[in-house]
Length: 362
Ligand code: GLU
Image 1 (tube, helix red, strand yellow):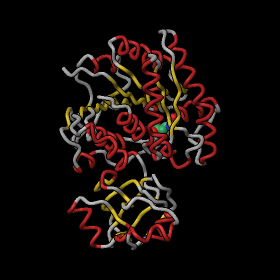
Image 2 (cartoon, rainbow, N blue to C red; image 1 turned 180 degrees about the horizontal axis):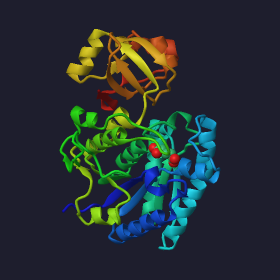
Image 3 (cartoon, protein in one colour; image 1 turned 90 degrees about the vertical axis):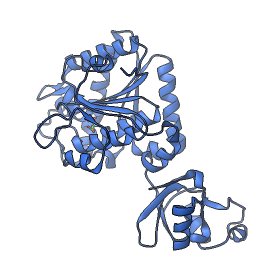
């Protein structure tokens, strides 16, 4: 049996809300009980929880999920407080404090903010405080979309170097075409992803498709993943004790490539550079850095330090990397040799527009 040291548990809206009654306090109590049990065994626990919108809808007596973003955000603002209160109270009863962290994709795009999240989570865990994470729904219009917290939990699991991600939902796991539970997935292939179908939305967001994406991404980071039914009694405790539940995905990738995964997956590109054939060959076949001389077009409004996308002449994305120059400066030096940078930009910068150490082939 594998011994886990740090686990991220994602709790879906349908797990902690019950139809018409809003937040299910008993369920939160049971989760708190299991968190305590895991912490007592020396396992660090990080919670990523949905349910703010569902809880807010109940408090505000909204019968249907509002169609407009502002009302959804209002529901989230109200519901987040009620939800945190429950987590806080039930964990306090067990001598644990909680630390609320609200994140958006933007926080993962910026390397400094990304590292700050990591340090904060580590500090909370050092003090035996349970991080309780949700999306910052009130500011993240783009993020109130299907699948956010599945993706968010996978980003958090990678960032805090967890060894297990448990996605708790209201079904038993991944079902195959005949409706049979798939117990183990050795690799999340394109065929497996197809089994997830389309995502659906109602109270929460997401669906099997976004869970499979999350599983794909964490397993590539060497993290195991389990999709299981959060309504099963003591599910977390039993998984941690080695019982078989739901669908298990085995972590395979190399944990040490964290920065490359941040470039390729955790952040979202702020712009694109199109490059010529010579630079495409240099990057794809010779493992070289990207130089300004190979750049034909610059699009987007990025700063030095942002992740950008690199596409070939046909517009196909071939790589991503951290830009050493802003879009503004790159537009001036594209196609030129390094020796001319100083006279054009007024200062000397690095030879590479994207250094090969900060570049990932897609
Ligand atoms: N952040 C949303 C909420 O708390 C849920 C997003 C999701 O379920 O993926 O209600």
